Length: 499
Image 1 (cartoon, rainbow, N blue to C red):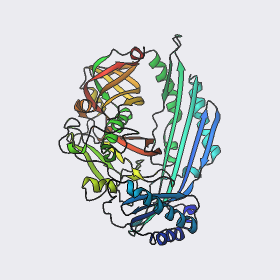
Image 2: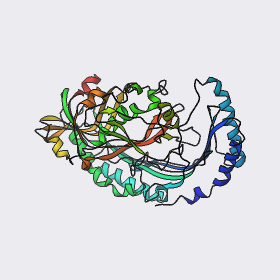
Image 3: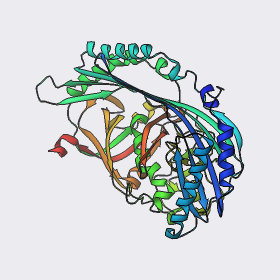
Image 4: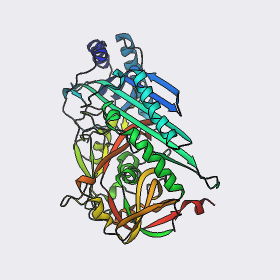
C-alpha cells in the first residue's frame, strides 16, 4: 500500500481537528458535527495537433464543517486553515442551522455508524504529479503526431489527473485519513468526408477514466491505437447509413455503461426519488413504494452498488460521512430492491445503516448523496464470450463506444448514440454502419435484455464529471458492464431524424 503524501501529513491536522471539536462542543443543541480537511491536486493537459494548448495545475486546500443543530443542517467552509479559522467556521455553521430550523418540515436524523479510526490509500502505482511535465507533453505530442501522419485532419489529446487527500473527524469519535488517485487520458481524431458532403466524423480512443495513476497511461497502447482510430474513421465515412426500425443489438461495455449510468444509476438515487433534485435534474420513475415489485428489466438483470471495486472511480475506504465502503444490490432478477443512501436518506428510508453514498467534490461544498460504482453483473453461470453473443443474432448491430445521449426528467425515455456500429449478419460482424442511435423507455429496454456476457467481457468504464446538486457538484463514478444482447430495440437514423 502507498503511504499518505508527506505534504498532506505536514498540514496541522491534529491542531485543526482539535479546534473543530472544541468549538462544536460549545454549540447549544448540537446533535452531530464533523470536520473535513481537503488537500487536492488537479492537473489538466491539452495538446492540439502538435502544440501544447493548455496546462492547468491546481492545489486547493481547505476544510468544511457540517453540523446538525436542533435537527437542522448548518455548513461552512474556509481555506483559512488555522484554529481561529476553524472556530469561526463552526460558529457560522451553527448560525446557519439556527436560521434554517424554522424552515424545515422535519428534523434531520442520521442513521448510526460506528466511529471508525483508520487510514486508507487507494492502490495506484505511479503518482501522476511525480512524472515530469516535459515527459507528459512529449508523449502526448507523439500520439497526436501519429494521428495526423495516419491521415487525421485534426487531432488532440487531453489528460486529467487528480489526487485527493482527506481527513475526516466527527463528534462521534471518527478519525479517518484517505488518499486516492484517478486519471483520464483520451485522444480524438477527425476527418471530413472525402466525397465533399461536408460530413465531419470524429472518434475517440478506447481509453477510459480509471482509479489509477500514470501507470495506466504507460500501459495503454495509444500510439498503436492512433493509427487504428484513423483507419476506423475512414471506414465509417465510407459505410452505409442504417435502416431504422426494431433491431437486435449487441452492446459493448464501452457504450452500455452510459445507459446504465443514466437510466439505472441516477434512477436509483433515493434523494432523487424523494424529489430533492426535482428543480434541477428531475426525479425518477422508480419510486420507493415500488421497492420489491417494480420490474426494472428482465430476470437476468442484476445491478449492484459498491464503493469497493478495485480502481473504481467511486471507490473509497469511507465516504464523506465516515461510513465504511460496502457492496449491495439495487436490482436483483430484474426487480428494484434497493437505493443509494447517505445517512440522512437511510434514516428516512427506514434502513438501519447508510450504504456510504455521501461525497463532496470540494472543501467548500456540503456532502451530497452521490452514486457509488453502479455495475451490471455478468452471467454468473457461464463465461459467455462476445462471439457467442454475436452468434445469437441473425441480423443486428454491434454498438461500441459512447457519444451523445438524452434522457427525460424521470429517467424513463432515452436515446443513445455511439462511436462505432457494426452490422451483424448471421452471427458475424460485416462492416460498419453510420447515423445510428437506439431509443427506448427504461423498463422496455432492460426488459429486452436476453443474454449477458461472462466475466471475460466485463469491463470497468465511467466518467469524471457526473453532475448533481445546486450549486453544481461533479463526482467521479465507474460502472462495470459486460457485453449484452437486447432483442428488437428501436433504432433511429440520426441524419434523417436531424432533417
